[in-house]
Image (cartoon, rainbow, N blue to C red; front, side):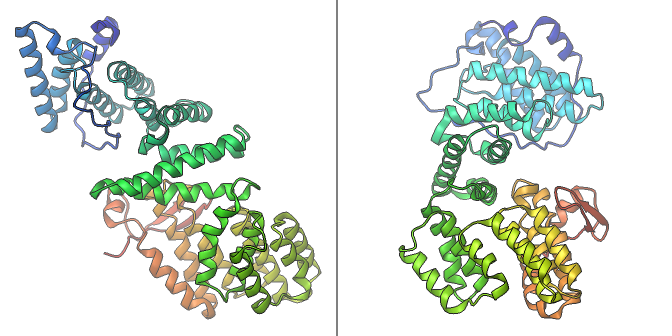
Length: 474
Protein backbone atom coordinates (compact mmCIF):
# COMPACT_ATOMS: atom_id res chain seq x y z
CA UNK A 1 0.00 0.00 0.00
CA UNK A 2 1.44 3.39 -0.98
CA UNK A 3 1.16 6.69 0.77
CA UNK A 4 -0.94 8.07 -2.07
CA UNK A 5 -3.66 5.54 -1.27
CA UNK A 6 -4.35 7.66 1.78
CA UNK A 7 -4.24 11.17 0.37
CA UNK A 8 -3.97 12.10 -3.28
CA UNK A 9 -1.39 14.71 -4.19
CA UNK A 10 -3.93 17.46 -4.87
CA UNK A 11 -5.85 16.66 -1.72
CA UNK A 12 -2.71 16.72 0.38
CA UNK A 13 -1.84 20.17 -0.95
CA UNK A 14 -5.29 21.31 0.14
CA UNK A 15 -4.69 19.93 3.61
CA UNK A 16 -1.31 21.57 3.90
CA UNK A 17 -2.92 24.93 3.27
CA UNK A 18 -5.21 24.51 6.28
CA UNK A 19 -4.19 24.91 9.90
CA UNK A 20 -6.52 24.05 12.75
CA UNK A 21 -7.72 26.89 14.89
CA UNK A 22 -6.82 26.61 18.56
CA UNK A 23 -9.89 25.43 20.44
CA UNK A 24 -10.64 23.71 23.70
CA UNK A 25 -10.40 19.96 23.44
CA UNK A 26 -13.92 18.60 23.65
CA UNK A 27 -14.46 15.25 22.02
CA UNK A 28 -16.59 12.25 22.84
CA UNK A 29 -15.17 10.09 20.06
CA UNK A 30 -15.28 6.47 21.25
CA UNK A 31 -11.86 4.96 21.98
CA UNK A 32 -10.62 2.00 19.95
CA UNK A 33 -10.75 -1.51 21.36
CA UNK A 34 -7.46 -2.60 22.99
CA UNK A 35 -5.01 -4.54 20.85
CA UNK A 36 -3.84 -7.97 21.96
CA UNK A 37 -0.18 -8.80 22.51
CA UNK A 38 -0.15 -11.36 19.72
CA UNK A 39 -1.84 -9.11 17.19
CA UNK A 40 0.20 -8.77 13.97
CA UNK A 41 1.58 -5.47 12.74
CA UNK A 42 -0.40 -3.40 10.28
CA UNK A 43 0.40 -3.89 6.59
CA UNK A 44 0.13 -0.14 5.97
CA UNK A 45 3.15 2.23 5.74
CA UNK A 46 4.92 2.62 9.08
CA UNK A 47 8.20 4.08 10.19
CA UNK A 48 9.65 0.62 10.85
CA UNK A 49 9.50 0.05 7.07
CA UNK A 50 11.75 3.04 6.40
CA UNK A 51 15.55 3.24 6.36
CA UNK A 52 16.95 3.69 9.87
CA UNK A 53 17.80 7.38 9.57
CA UNK A 54 14.39 8.28 8.13
CA UNK A 55 12.60 6.02 10.62
CA UNK A 56 14.24 7.86 13.53
CA UNK A 57 13.17 11.22 12.08
CA UNK A 58 9.55 10.12 11.60
CA UNK A 59 9.33 8.57 15.05
CA UNK A 60 10.76 11.76 16.54
CA UNK A 61 8.19 13.82 14.62
CA UNK A 62 5.49 11.56 16.02
CA UNK A 63 6.64 12.27 19.59
CA UNK A 64 6.98 16.01 18.90
CA UNK A 65 3.54 16.51 17.39
CA UNK A 66 1.98 14.50 20.20
CA UNK A 67 3.71 16.81 22.70
CA UNK A 68 2.37 19.86 20.88
CA UNK A 69 -1.08 18.26 20.94
CA UNK A 70 -0.92 17.72 24.70
CA UNK A 71 0.12 21.35 25.08
CA UNK A 72 -2.89 22.34 22.92
CA UNK A 73 -0.71 23.95 20.29
CA UNK A 74 -2.84 22.52 17.53
CA UNK A 75 -1.32 24.53 14.69
CA UNK A 76 2.22 23.22 15.22
CA UNK A 77 0.95 19.74 16.05
CA UNK A 78 -1.00 19.62 12.81
CA UNK A 79 1.97 20.70 10.67
CA UNK A 80 4.18 17.93 12.01
CA UNK A 81 1.33 15.40 12.00
CA UNK A 82 1.08 15.87 8.21
CA UNK A 83 4.70 14.81 7.82
CA UNK A 84 4.09 11.64 9.80
CA UNK A 85 0.82 10.81 8.06
CA UNK A 86 2.43 11.24 4.63
CA UNK A 87 4.96 8.43 5.12
CA UNK A 88 3.87 6.39 8.17
CA UNK A 89 0.12 6.64 8.82
CA UNK A 90 0.21 3.30 10.66
CA UNK A 91 2.90 4.63 13.07
CA UNK A 92 4.89 1.60 14.30
CA UNK A 93 2.23 -0.82 13.10
CA UNK A 94 0.83 -1.34 16.60
CA UNK A 95 -1.35 1.74 17.11
CA UNK A 96 -3.96 3.77 15.21
CA UNK A 97 -2.97 7.00 16.94
CA UNK A 98 -2.04 8.90 13.77
CA UNK A 99 -5.46 8.21 12.26
CA UNK A 100 -7.31 9.24 15.42
CA UNK A 101 -5.30 12.43 15.69
CA UNK A 102 -6.04 13.30 12.07
CA UNK A 103 -9.74 12.92 12.70
CA UNK A 104 -9.41 15.12 15.77
CA UNK A 105 -7.58 17.85 13.83
CA UNK A 106 -10.34 18.06 11.23
CA UNK A 107 -13.01 18.07 13.91
CA UNK A 108 -11.25 21.14 15.28
CA UNK A 109 -11.28 22.73 11.86
CA UNK A 110 -15.00 22.08 11.53
CA UNK A 111 -15.72 23.72 14.88
CA UNK A 112 -13.88 26.86 13.82
CA UNK A 113 -15.25 27.04 10.25
CA UNK A 114 -18.30 29.03 9.22
CA UNK A 115 -18.30 28.16 5.51
CA UNK A 116 -20.63 25.17 5.01
CA UNK A 117 -18.84 23.95 1.88
CA UNK A 118 -15.50 24.02 3.69
CA UNK A 119 -17.06 22.06 6.55
CA UNK A 120 -18.30 19.44 4.11
CA UNK A 121 -14.77 19.08 2.74
CA UNK A 122 -13.41 18.51 6.24
CA UNK A 123 -16.09 15.94 6.94
CA UNK A 124 -15.20 14.11 3.72
CA UNK A 125 -11.56 14.05 4.82
CA UNK A 126 -12.53 12.60 8.19
CA UNK A 127 -14.41 9.78 6.52
CA UNK A 128 -11.53 9.14 4.15
CA UNK A 129 -9.30 8.70 7.20
CA UNK A 130 -11.90 6.33 8.66
CA UNK A 131 -11.70 4.23 5.47
CA UNK A 132 -7.92 4.15 5.68
CA UNK A 133 -8.09 3.26 9.38
CA UNK A 134 -10.37 0.34 8.59
CA UNK A 135 -7.91 -0.97 5.99
CA UNK A 136 -4.88 -0.55 8.23
CA UNK A 137 -6.38 -1.62 11.55
CA UNK A 138 -9.49 -3.71 10.83
CA UNK A 139 -11.45 -4.14 14.05
CA UNK A 140 -14.73 -5.74 13.13
CA UNK A 141 -17.60 -3.27 13.29
CA UNK A 142 -15.65 -0.57 15.13
CA UNK A 143 -15.02 1.83 12.23
CA UNK A 144 -18.53 1.42 10.80
CA UNK A 145 -19.81 2.19 14.30
CA UNK A 146 -17.63 5.28 14.62
CA UNK A 147 -18.80 6.56 11.24
CA UNK A 148 -22.41 6.02 12.21
CA UNK A 149 -21.84 7.60 15.63
CA UNK A 150 -20.39 10.74 14.05
CA UNK A 151 -23.13 10.96 11.44
CA UNK A 152 -25.81 10.62 14.12
CA UNK A 153 -24.46 13.04 16.70
CA UNK A 154 -21.98 15.36 14.97
CA UNK A 155 -23.13 15.60 11.36
CA UNK A 156 -26.90 14.97 11.34
CA UNK A 157 -28.56 15.17 7.95
CA UNK A 158 -25.41 14.20 6.06
CA UNK A 159 -27.07 10.93 5.01
CA UNK A 160 -30.65 9.65 5.23
CA UNK A 161 -32.01 7.90 8.32
CA UNK A 162 -32.31 4.68 6.32
CA UNK A 163 -28.63 4.85 5.33
CA UNK A 164 -27.66 5.70 8.88
CA UNK A 165 -29.59 2.73 10.25
CA UNK A 166 -27.91 0.47 7.69
CA UNK A 167 -24.48 1.69 8.80
CA UNK A 168 -25.23 1.04 12.47
CA UNK A 169 -26.66 -2.34 11.53
CA UNK A 170 -23.46 -3.19 9.65
CA UNK A 171 -21.45 -2.49 12.80
CA UNK A 172 -23.82 -4.50 15.00
CA UNK A 173 -24.04 -7.41 12.56
CA UNK A 174 -20.26 -7.58 12.34
CA UNK A 175 -19.67 -7.59 16.10
CA UNK A 176 -22.78 -9.40 17.33
CA UNK A 177 -22.65 -10.03 21.08
CA UNK A 178 -19.52 -7.88 21.31
CA UNK A 179 -21.14 -4.87 19.63
CA UNK A 180 -19.53 -1.52 20.45
CA UNK A 181 -21.13 0.14 23.46
CA UNK A 182 -21.34 3.55 21.79
CA UNK A 183 -23.64 2.32 19.01
CA UNK A 184 -26.34 0.99 21.35
CA UNK A 185 -28.29 4.16 22.17
CA UNK A 186 -28.48 5.65 18.65
CA UNK A 187 -29.08 2.22 17.13
CA UNK A 188 -31.93 1.66 19.60
CA UNK A 189 -33.57 4.96 18.63
CA UNK A 190 -33.28 4.20 14.92
CA UNK A 191 -34.48 0.61 15.39
CA UNK A 192 -37.71 1.81 16.98
CA UNK A 193 -38.23 4.45 14.29
CA UNK A 194 -37.51 2.01 11.46
CA UNK A 195 -40.07 -0.48 12.76
CA UNK A 196 -42.89 2.00 13.35
CA UNK A 197 -42.24 3.60 9.97
CA UNK A 198 -42.68 0.19 8.34
CA UNK A 199 -39.07 -0.04 7.16
CA UNK A 200 -38.30 -3.34 8.95
CA UNK A 201 -40.46 -6.22 10.13
CA UNK A 202 -41.16 -7.55 13.61
CA UNK A 203 -38.73 -10.46 13.32
CA UNK A 204 -35.82 -8.16 12.55
CA UNK A 205 -36.82 -5.72 15.28
CA UNK A 206 -37.05 -8.58 17.81
CA UNK A 207 -33.63 -9.85 16.78
CA UNK A 208 -31.91 -6.55 17.43
CA UNK A 209 -33.95 -5.76 20.56
CA UNK A 210 -32.67 -8.98 22.10
CA UNK A 211 -29.12 -8.28 20.97
CA UNK A 212 -29.14 -4.75 22.42
CA UNK A 213 -30.34 -5.97 25.81
CA UNK A 214 -27.89 -8.89 25.78
CA UNK A 215 -24.90 -6.63 25.09
CA UNK A 216 -26.14 -4.19 27.75
CA UNK A 217 -26.58 -6.94 30.33
CA UNK A 218 -23.05 -8.23 29.72
CA UNK A 219 -21.63 -4.71 29.91
CA UNK A 220 -23.33 -3.97 33.23
CA UNK A 221 -22.20 -7.28 34.71
CA UNK A 222 -18.56 -7.06 33.64
CA UNK A 223 -17.76 -3.33 33.84
CA UNK A 224 -15.46 -1.93 36.50
CA UNK A 225 -15.02 1.53 38.02
CA UNK A 226 -15.61 4.53 35.81
CA UNK A 227 -16.08 2.19 32.85
CA UNK A 228 -19.52 1.43 34.29
CA UNK A 229 -20.72 5.01 33.71
CA UNK A 230 -21.18 4.43 29.99
CA UNK A 231 -23.19 1.27 30.60
CA UNK A 232 -25.35 3.04 33.19
CA UNK A 233 -26.08 5.75 30.61
CA UNK A 234 -27.14 3.12 28.08
CA UNK A 235 -29.27 1.38 30.70
CA UNK A 236 -31.07 4.64 31.40
CA UNK A 237 -32.01 4.98 27.75
CA UNK A 238 -32.20 1.79 25.70
CA UNK A 239 -34.69 -0.27 27.80
CA UNK A 240 -37.00 2.74 28.14
CA UNK A 241 -36.90 3.45 24.41
CA UNK A 242 -37.54 -0.21 23.61
CA UNK A 243 -40.75 -0.03 25.66
CA UNK A 244 -42.34 1.36 22.50
CA UNK A 245 -42.53 -2.25 21.32
CA UNK A 246 -44.94 -3.02 24.16
CA UNK A 247 -47.62 -1.46 21.98
CA UNK A 248 -47.04 -4.18 19.36
CA UNK A 249 -49.13 -7.27 19.92
CA UNK A 250 -46.94 -10.37 20.09
CA UNK A 251 -43.62 -8.56 20.20
CA UNK A 252 -42.99 -9.57 23.82
CA UNK A 253 -44.11 -12.80 25.47
CA UNK A 254 -45.81 -13.39 28.81
CA UNK A 255 -42.51 -13.77 30.66
CA UNK A 256 -41.51 -10.24 29.70
CA UNK A 257 -44.70 -8.69 31.11
CA UNK A 258 -44.64 -10.76 34.29
CA UNK A 259 -41.02 -9.91 34.96
CA UNK A 260 -41.62 -6.22 34.41
CA UNK A 261 -45.08 -5.56 35.88
CA UNK A 262 -45.57 -8.08 38.69
CA UNK A 263 -43.16 -6.20 40.96
CA UNK A 264 -45.24 -3.03 40.44
CA UNK A 265 -48.31 -4.91 41.63
CA UNK A 266 -46.48 -6.23 44.70
CA UNK A 267 -45.39 -2.70 45.57
CA UNK A 268 -48.96 -1.35 45.21
CA UNK A 269 -51.28 -4.30 45.96
CA UNK A 270 -54.21 -2.06 46.92
CA UNK A 271 -54.02 0.44 44.06
CA UNK A 272 -56.84 -0.33 41.63
CA UNK A 273 -55.22 1.64 38.84
CA UNK A 274 -52.06 -0.46 39.19
CA UNK A 275 -54.07 -3.67 39.45
CA UNK A 276 -55.98 -2.89 36.27
CA UNK A 277 -52.80 -1.94 34.42
CA UNK A 278 -50.94 -5.09 35.45
CA UNK A 279 -53.95 -7.26 34.62
CA UNK A 280 -54.16 -5.64 31.20
CA UNK A 281 -50.44 -6.07 30.47
CA UNK A 282 -50.60 -9.75 31.44
CA UNK A 283 -53.57 -10.18 29.14
CA UNK A 284 -51.79 -8.30 26.34
CA UNK A 285 -48.85 -10.69 26.76
CA UNK A 286 -51.26 -13.64 26.51
CA UNK A 287 -50.43 -14.92 29.99
CA UNK A 288 -52.75 -17.76 31.07
CA UNK A 289 -55.13 -16.79 33.88
CA UNK A 290 -54.17 -20.02 35.62
CA UNK A 291 -50.65 -18.66 36.12
CA UNK A 292 -49.95 -18.06 39.84
CA UNK A 293 -49.02 -14.39 39.42
CA UNK A 294 -51.97 -13.65 37.18
CA UNK A 295 -54.34 -15.38 39.61
CA UNK A 296 -52.99 -13.19 42.41
CA UNK A 297 -53.72 -10.04 40.42
CA UNK A 298 -57.22 -11.28 39.51
CA UNK A 299 -58.01 -12.05 43.15
CA UNK A 300 -56.87 -8.58 44.26
CA UNK A 301 -58.98 -6.93 41.57
CA UNK A 302 -62.11 -8.86 42.46
CA UNK A 303 -61.70 -8.05 46.13
CA UNK A 304 -60.76 -4.38 45.98
CA UNK A 305 -61.73 -2.81 42.67
CA UNK A 306 -65.46 -2.40 42.23
CA UNK A 307 -66.05 -0.72 38.89
CA UNK A 308 -68.59 1.99 38.22
CA UNK A 309 -71.54 0.63 36.27
CA UNK A 310 -71.14 3.27 33.56
CA UNK A 311 -67.52 2.25 32.96
CA UNK A 312 -67.78 -1.51 33.30
CA UNK A 313 -67.58 -2.01 29.55
CA UNK A 314 -64.54 0.27 29.39
CA UNK A 315 -62.70 -1.59 32.13
CA UNK A 316 -63.69 -4.93 30.64
CA UNK A 317 -62.15 -3.96 27.29
CA UNK A 318 -59.13 -2.55 29.07
CA UNK A 319 -58.56 -5.75 31.04
CA UNK A 320 -58.79 -7.72 27.83
CA UNK A 321 -56.04 -5.47 26.38
CA UNK A 322 -58.46 -4.11 23.76
CA UNK A 323 -57.14 -0.59 24.12
CA UNK A 324 -58.69 1.03 21.07
CA UNK A 325 -62.06 -0.44 21.97
CA UNK A 326 -61.67 0.79 25.55
CA UNK A 327 -60.97 4.31 24.28
CA UNK A 328 -64.02 4.31 22.01
CA UNK A 329 -66.24 3.08 24.85
CA UNK A 330 -64.82 5.70 27.22
CA UNK A 331 -65.39 8.47 24.68
CA UNK A 332 -69.02 7.36 24.33
CA UNK A 333 -69.43 7.16 28.10
CA UNK A 334 -67.98 10.65 28.54
CA UNK A 335 -70.34 12.10 25.93
CA UNK A 336 -73.35 10.57 27.71
CA UNK A 337 -72.26 11.43 31.26
CA UNK A 338 -74.18 14.43 32.66
CA UNK A 339 -72.12 14.70 35.84
CA UNK A 340 -69.18 17.06 35.28
CA UNK A 341 -66.85 15.33 37.76
CA UNK A 342 -67.52 11.85 36.37
CA UNK A 343 -67.17 13.13 32.78
CA UNK A 344 -63.77 14.62 33.58
CA UNK A 345 -62.68 11.38 35.25
CA UNK A 346 -63.65 9.36 32.18
CA UNK A 347 -61.75 11.69 29.86
CA UNK A 348 -58.69 11.44 32.11
CA UNK A 349 -59.00 7.66 31.93
CA UNK A 350 -58.62 7.95 28.14
CA UNK A 351 -55.46 9.97 28.72
CA UNK A 352 -54.08 7.27 30.99
CA UNK A 353 -54.75 4.57 28.38
CA UNK A 354 -52.80 6.52 25.79
CA UNK A 355 -50.00 7.02 28.29
CA UNK A 356 -49.69 3.62 29.93
CA UNK A 357 -50.69 1.29 27.12
CA UNK A 358 -50.27 3.02 23.77
CA UNK A 359 -47.23 5.15 24.70
CA UNK A 360 -48.72 8.07 22.78
CA UNK A 361 -47.65 11.04 24.88
CA UNK A 362 -49.00 13.93 22.77
CA UNK A 363 -52.48 12.39 22.62
CA UNK A 364 -52.37 11.55 26.32
CA UNK A 365 -51.64 15.21 27.06
CA UNK A 366 -54.52 16.34 24.84
CA UNK A 367 -57.04 14.29 26.81
CA UNK A 368 -55.53 15.36 30.13
CA UNK A 369 -56.03 18.97 29.11
CA UNK A 370 -59.57 18.18 28.00
CA UNK A 371 -60.27 16.65 31.42
CA UNK A 372 -58.86 19.73 33.17
CA UNK A 373 -61.09 21.97 31.05
CA UNK A 374 -64.19 20.02 32.12
CA UNK A 375 -63.43 20.11 35.83
CA UNK A 376 -61.82 23.28 37.12
CA UNK A 377 -59.28 23.35 39.96
CA UNK A 378 -58.53 19.66 39.56
CA UNK A 379 -54.87 18.77 39.96
CA UNK A 380 -54.84 15.18 38.64
CA UNK A 381 -54.65 16.06 34.91
CA UNK A 382 -51.62 18.28 35.54
CA UNK A 383 -50.02 15.59 37.68
CA UNK A 384 -50.33 13.24 34.72
CA UNK A 385 -48.95 15.79 32.26
CA UNK A 386 -45.98 16.24 34.60
CA UNK A 387 -45.37 12.49 34.50
CA UNK A 388 -45.56 12.54 30.71
CA UNK A 389 -42.87 15.21 30.59
CA UNK A 390 -40.69 13.56 33.22
CA UNK A 391 -40.85 10.27 31.28
CA UNK A 392 -39.68 11.91 28.06
CA UNK A 393 -35.94 11.84 28.70
CA UNK A 394 -35.43 8.87 26.35
CA UNK A 395 -37.72 10.44 23.73
CA UNK A 396 -36.09 13.88 23.73
CA UNK A 397 -32.48 12.91 24.40
CA UNK A 398 -30.07 10.02 25.01
CA UNK A 399 -31.44 9.30 28.51
CA UNK A 400 -28.77 11.36 30.22
CA UNK A 401 -27.36 14.80 29.58
CA UNK A 402 -28.84 18.16 28.68
CA UNK A 403 -31.64 17.18 26.27
CA UNK A 404 -32.89 14.47 28.61
CA UNK A 405 -32.57 16.58 31.76
CA UNK A 406 -34.39 19.74 30.66
CA UNK A 407 -37.68 17.82 30.45
CA UNK A 408 -37.72 18.01 34.26
CA UNK A 409 -38.36 21.77 34.09
CA UNK A 410 -41.82 21.64 32.48
CA UNK A 411 -42.61 18.51 34.51
CA UNK A 412 -41.96 20.35 37.76
CA UNK A 413 -43.94 23.33 36.42
CA UNK A 414 -46.95 21.05 36.00
CA UNK A 415 -46.65 19.57 39.49
CA UNK A 416 -46.28 23.01 41.04
CA UNK A 417 -49.39 24.17 39.20
CA UNK A 418 -51.31 21.04 40.20
CA UNK A 419 -50.75 21.61 43.92
CA UNK A 420 -51.45 25.32 43.56
CA UNK A 421 -54.97 24.74 42.25
CA UNK A 422 -55.66 21.50 44.12
CA UNK A 423 -54.17 21.07 47.63
CA UNK A 424 -55.27 17.43 47.68
CA UNK A 425 -52.38 16.50 45.36
CA UNK A 426 -49.76 18.52 47.29
CA UNK A 427 -48.16 15.55 49.04
CA UNK A 428 -47.65 13.57 45.85
CA UNK A 429 -46.60 16.66 43.91
CA UNK A 430 -43.97 17.58 46.49
CA UNK A 431 -42.57 14.05 46.45
CA UNK A 432 -42.20 14.13 42.67
CA UNK A 433 -40.71 17.64 42.69
CA UNK A 434 -38.13 16.66 45.31
CA UNK A 435 -37.27 13.49 43.42
CA UNK A 436 -36.93 14.99 39.94
CA UNK A 437 -35.15 18.17 41.04
CA UNK A 438 -32.03 16.03 41.38
CA UNK A 439 -32.23 15.24 37.65
CA UNK A 440 -32.21 18.86 36.51
CA UNK A 441 -29.05 20.09 34.73
CA UNK A 442 -26.16 21.07 36.97
CA UNK A 443 -25.02 24.66 37.41
CA UNK A 444 -21.96 23.82 35.34
CA UNK A 445 -24.14 22.53 32.49
CA UNK A 446 -26.22 25.71 32.53
CA UNK A 447 -23.08 27.85 32.56
CA UNK A 448 -21.49 25.91 29.68
CA UNK A 449 -24.61 26.53 27.60
CA UNK A 450 -24.11 30.28 28.20
CA UNK A 451 -27.47 30.36 29.97
CA UNK A 452 -28.56 31.88 33.27
CA UNK A 453 -30.73 30.43 36.01
CA UNK A 454 -34.11 32.14 36.20
CA UNK A 455 -34.20 33.04 32.51
CA UNK A 456 -36.98 31.75 30.26
CA UNK A 457 -36.30 28.67 28.16
CA UNK A 458 -38.26 26.82 25.47
CA UNK A 459 -38.25 23.02 25.61
CA UNK A 460 -38.80 21.56 22.17
CA UNK A 461 -39.20 17.87 21.27
CA UNK A 462 -42.89 16.90 21.52
CA UNK A 463 -43.28 18.93 24.75
CA UNK A 464 -42.96 22.43 23.23
CA UNK A 465 -43.39 24.35 26.48
CA UNK A 466 -41.87 27.58 27.78
CA UNK A 467 -40.30 27.16 31.20
CA UNK A 468 -37.63 28.60 33.51
CA UNK A 469 -33.97 27.57 33.74
CA UNK A 470 -33.06 25.88 37.03
CA UNK A 471 -30.18 23.75 38.24
CA UNK A 472 -30.10 20.66 40.42
CA UNK A 473 -29.56 21.24 44.16
CA UNK A 474 -25.93 20.83 45.17
